[in-house]
Image (cartoon, rainbow, N blue to C red; front, top):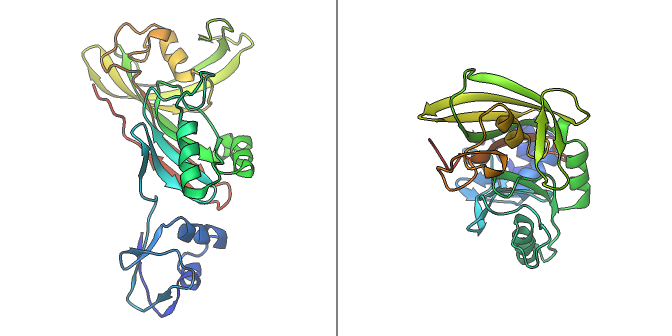
Length: 281
């Protein structure tokens, strides 16, 4: 978003008027997260003096920072960090000594930039699933996000490559999920068997040979939900040996968390993040 300044004014005071009815807290957050530039120069100073004719640019995201080749920060403010993780990197430790995880990499990053190292995981992605992941910088933000996740999150989409061609190009999968405590494999039942109800919507965007590219939207967020449900309808995600895939065309699980839209728990701003899938059929 870009605006041309109409009159001389301190920056924050001008933004309060120009961005009304957006809350003052959210406008201050734009400044503190380095998302405001004046005439091409980023500024965080509330009292920066604007002149009529100056150009204000409001960035939707902060600059992307590579914490590690496996993890990239795509947004950061005083309350949370949104990252794009590669496949093969676990979100948190599985108990192995000195295991490198998204959490450990962000902990190290926070120690370097703020000396606190405080970081809290909000939700998870499977080790082999890549894409968008959210962390909180304090316990209050973590609590607000986790306790209100279903209400705050407006859109949560994945991109996948599934085996086979779908007879129905648009559909929904409704099932009940239970986990085997020994194998840790999730079973999907079309009938209520006392498990957790899971709802997934999908749209086939492309087909080639024996594969389908699928855009997937979660209505619920259960462990291994997509993987178990797609396997149960005869279209396992490519590369997913655990759930019966017979092929591995990409050398990885072909599942990517590609889009997340949620309301910021403190500012109320609608936050929108996209990450293109690193695979195509």
